[in-house]
Image 1 (cartoon, rainbow, N blue to C red):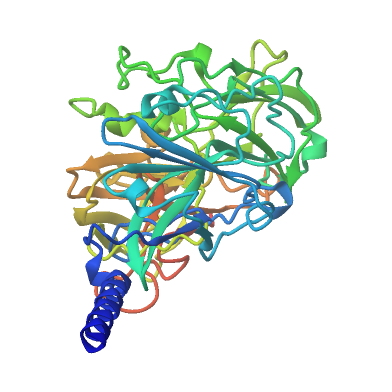
Image 2: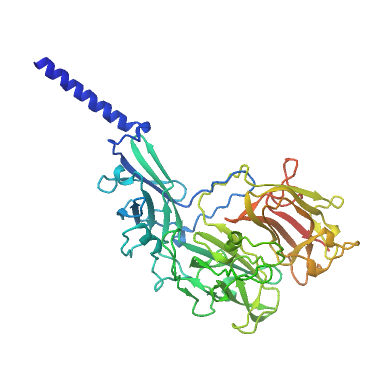
Length: 510
């Protein structure tokens, strides 16, 4: 009898060991009896998922001195497929508070009281950082319509104590018997940086001008999928010297805002609701006199648009501020402005819009490809002259595949533009009215007819010091530079012999 009892005991131990082994196997994730430990993985920022080395890596790590990566609190929400809430778990322990994970994922092991596999399976998970004033979130719809609700204390031009961030679960993976839940947090705010230049292209210190951010959003959705019926549009109290200054630029923050108006014809006028448009009112000197200027914070591409139909999904990103994006605005004060704040002159600015990513890895293997054709004038491939387009190189693009993305070809200076070869006179001269600020296309564009990069004014060093411009193409959205200056034969160097693979560099010599 003792022998039989011993036999059954050994069998029971063996079966228990087998069960434990099966729960430790990564391949046994579907075993209902296994309830793994859970590990939360999170960091600020994320990676793009496109392919082909046709777009540059864009990286904005966030400024640690401005608390742009700081995490003090995390709230994890679990919802069933029908949207009902399973649970909300808050983490404010010392291993969370004060962390700033930007390059590597931070790992936090959860207790069974916090989260188990049975809580996770088949459900939808969201992670929110740095929000304290939660209302009643009883289901997913409650979370979608909830707003950050800090409008009374939000300071658009000051250092933030922390940034509200959100993420939907990116990946669920079993590793050595533990379920790892991966999240890439994105900031709810957009960041605006203003760089002011004088008429000669020299930088103007933020202490030498005054400005006012108009129609910024003081409130926004908690999660990216959310809807915000009232984003509390407001404006700074007065035109004043910028409060927050970093690396010679004025810095502002705003929650998401859209000012597009789809009942307008974008081929005839800007399709916007002016009462909602976010812009900067700038007070700066031109030739020793103070003037007022209106500086848009995003692109304005209705000019020279001859599209037969309007694809609003492509236009919308150009007339809004998106969460977790950076809007780098360079305003060159090269003309007289308005005499008072109510009648500012418009400056021609071409903002650069980039995703506010940390450690973003863009590989772009076969998504975007463009063949660049350069027809030099003798050996000249990068020098240009006023009113003599053929002095410089003739450029065209063929075999274009932008993976369905719209794009814009632009310069970094309003003193230069583009003109199609068919518009050039026999002697190389051209009509300034036919010089384009930008060349645009969409995902179906396969080629760009031959064109020249040309100056808008004669070379005169008494007017300005810098007579160099850069030409680059941005595909959107997100707005990323495309390789247009690589030799079409695949050799090293650049097609024009100057600049980088994404930026053609031209120097005006006449």
